[in-house]
Image (cartoon, rainbow, N blue to C red):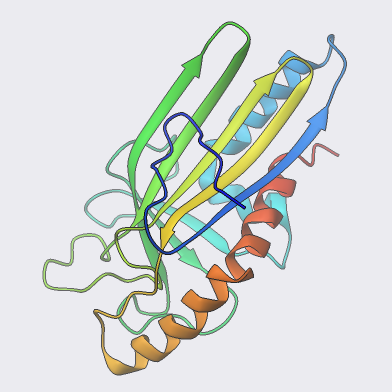
Length: 201
């Protein structure tokens, strides 16, 4: 199985990958208003767990100085992730990613928004290591799209390898979670997010 080639998503070169998608079909009268709801949910990172339920990781948005914020994300912001299970010592119990790109694509036939994230240090910590179970070569690419009467939420992981440039405790933790992620653990969490974003009940 090969990774999908998605506009704006980096090419797969080394390590694990996944393409995690959920879709919903709506009538032509509903589709635009439902896409507006999906966009609001997509850019409300602090509320992602509310949409996804107790089994989901918890996501919180921070600015480059490490201050918690509640606004639409932008390039250079950070997301603090609290996944089920043991956290990193490096990140004080959390995993961190930096938002390295946000893009919008409208071809006339389809429209999409993409947030690209990369494993990072805890913001505003100059001498720290990457606080994430994947190495900084990995990306998580979170996308929503509208095409015809179909809405899609997708997360596309690329170049996923465990992060070993940390202390021994985190090395062990990152090995098991990183390998678990490559073999399906992270895909389960991303599937919960994709389904939650599209759950308009």
